[in-house]
Length: 236
Ligand SMILES: [Zn+2]
Ligand SMILES: [Zn+2]
Image (spheres, rainbow, N blue to C red):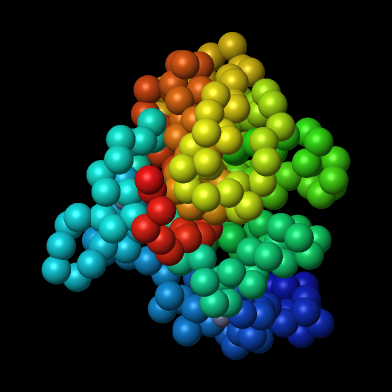
């Protein structure tokens, strides 16, 4: 280890990105062993929405095979426990620095999937009003970190054309209505193979309409990666 990094590690010992426990030694992932064990594996998850599948079935209890405009989705882990608290700190507690470890974790998850090599990483954007309230765009920071890790360009090619009510306050059916046609493509044309990045995936409604806008903008293969997938049976 270089002396500067050694000194920085002494002053600011690396912490687990999910539970904040101090990490001993160097590891590939910025996670303690317990949180690393909570990461989802591609073989055990629905290829369409990233939700864990029951042990004895390939029928997804979350999306029921719904046709999304994205070709596949993956999440690092389920939105619960320590990760849920970490996402909360990231989105509402001003801990922007979590974008880096989250981005590393997402990038490593993406590499486990038999997906195409992407031409660009595209963030699912916030509406500018929400951006001015929060002061930063959590999905943009995350997408930038993922793009750096995967060594592919970041293209901010989508825009929210109208303000939407927070999805968390709505029932599943209303979520689809709320974000219907909320996105538009701003780049002249998007590259062929893109990876959308967002912090959370719940019903998939937001990502579906973002993917639809991306396809209208010229993308032919659209995949989605998030840090956390909500547990649920709420795709109606
Ligand atoms: Zn941990
Ligand atoms: Zn599914």
